[in-house]
Image 1 (cartoon, rainbow, N blue to C red):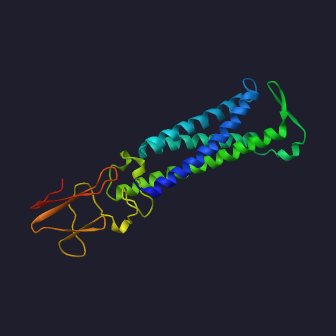
Image 2 (tube, helix red, strand yellow):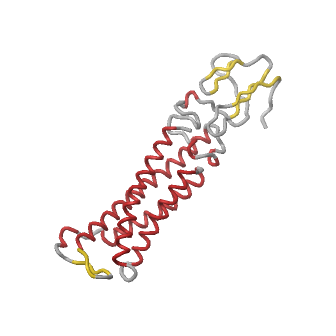
Image 3 (cartoon, helix red, strand yellow):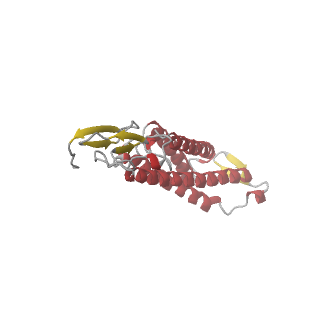
Length: 237
C-alpha cells in the first residue's frame, strides 16, 4: 500500500462527503417545503445525486479497483456537472441581498426569498466544488494507473486502488523513489547494471550465481518482489 496516495485519496473523499452531506441536507429541506407540487424536478434531482455520491464513495473506500473507480468517478462527476449547471441556470444570476423582505411560496405557506436564494447559492457552489474534486480524482486515478503499467504492473487496473503509487513512488512499495524501483515485466529476466553479475531490485543488490539466470517477479497486493535464480538461460515467453 502506498500510504501517501491512500491519505490523499481519503482526504479528497472526506472533503467530497462533507460537501455532499451539506447539499443533501439543504435539498432535504427544500423537499420538505416544496414537494410534491413546487420545484419538483430540480429538488428530486438534488436529492438523488448526493445520495448516489455518498453510497458510491463508501463502497469505493471499502473495496475498489482502479478500473471500477474510474468509471464511477466519471458517472458521478457528470451528475455533479449537471447539478452545478442546473443550479447556475436557476439561481446563478440572482442577487440575493437585493431581495429584501420578499417571500417565496411553499406547499404550506411562504419562506424568505433571500434565505432560499442563499441556500440555493450554497448548493450551486458546493456542486461545482464537488465536480472539480471528482474530476481531478479521475485524472489522477488514470494517470497513476498508467504509470504503474509502465513500471511493470500490467494488471494494476485489476488490483486494489490502494496499491496505486503517488508521483515519485512505486506501486506497493511505500516511500521508494522511481530510481530505486526495478523496471520489471512480470516474469521476464532482468540484466544487471553498474557492477557485473549484480542485479538491483527494489534498491537491493542481488549477487547473480555463475551460470544462472535471475528472474524477478512483481509482488502481489504490495508484497515484495520475488527473486529466483535458475541454472542456465531462462527464455522469455
